[in-house]
Amino acid sequence: MRNCHPSKSLAKVEAIISEMKANKRDTARFWIDLPIGPEGKKQKVMIEYFALRTNNGKYVGCLEASQNIARIQSLIGEKRLPG
Image (cartoon, rainbow, N blue to C red; front, top):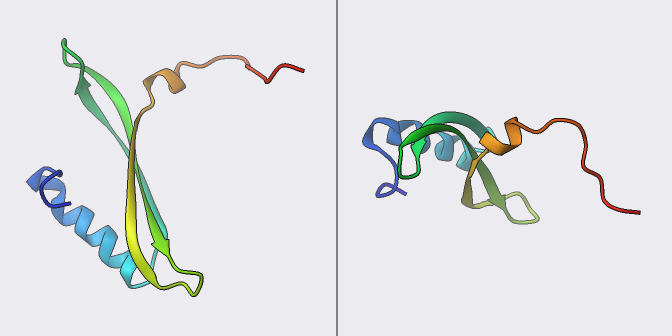
């Protein structure tokens, strides 16, 4: 974890994980504008943390998921499953 986050955000990530270990939170979600692709165009990226727990609620780890949501933000109307 310490090797894949910028030093300026590391303390915040560690605080989230500490809160998960202390049973104070189960999730954290935030979004940032990040330069992506060869042109470095800024796009919205959502980052989510999920506490992983045993059936008894004991903390065993954390899952971090990052997703470029620029296309999601541009959706209009509906697209439903056929049938």
